[in-house]
Image (cartoon, rainbow over all chains, first blue to last red; front, side, top):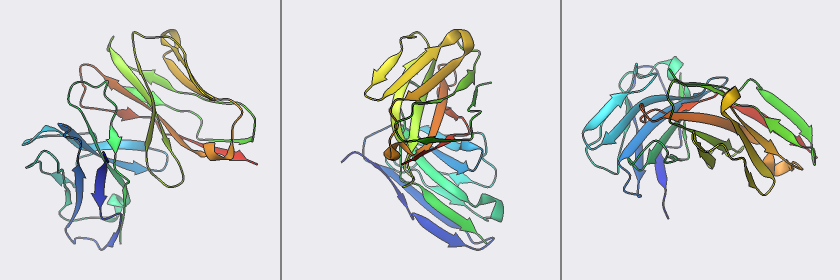
Length: 114
Length: 115
C-alpha cells in the first residue's frame, strides 16, 4: 500500500530534550516536506527536500533540522524543543515532476513539549 | 508572495443543507495550482481536488462541486445535501509554478454537520 508513515504518532517531552520524528514513504517520491498545524494558522511548511541531500527552509524553520540521506526517509529533528513547538506535525511527499502533483500526507505526529 | 484566505473559521449546518466553503487566493504567477484537502476528526489529510490556473471549468464529483473564478481569485467548494460524515476541517491550498516547492495552506474551515 502506497503510504507515508510517521513515528511516533504521539510524543510528550520536556524542554530541551532532543527528539527525532521519522518520516518514510514507499512511493519513490523525490519531494518530501514537513508541516506543522496550529489552530487558526492552517498548515505551515517547515522544511522541504527536492531529492537526496537537497533540503531547504520553508516558512517556519527556526528550531528544526532535517536530513535527507535516503530517498524514502526525511526525519525532522528538534535539537532543543521548546513549548512553542507543541503542535501537530505532518510529513508529506509528492513526485518532483511539478507543483501540480498533489502531496500525500502522513498520519501526523502530535507533539507536546512541557 | 502566495497567500490563501479562508475567512470562515467555523460553519455549522443541519444535515441535508447545502454549504459553501470559501477560498480566496493571492498570487503573481500566471500558472498555479489550487487544492482542497479534507481533515476528518481522525486527523489525516485527504486530497479532494486539484485545479490548474488554465482550467476554469467547474467540477462536480457526487455531492461535491468546485467553482473556480480567476476574476475574483476564488476557488469555492460546495457540498450539496450535507451529511454528518462531511464534518471535518477543510483546507484550501495554493502552489505556484515558479515556487513549486511551496504549498501554502489557508487557515482551514471547520464544518460541523448536525443530524
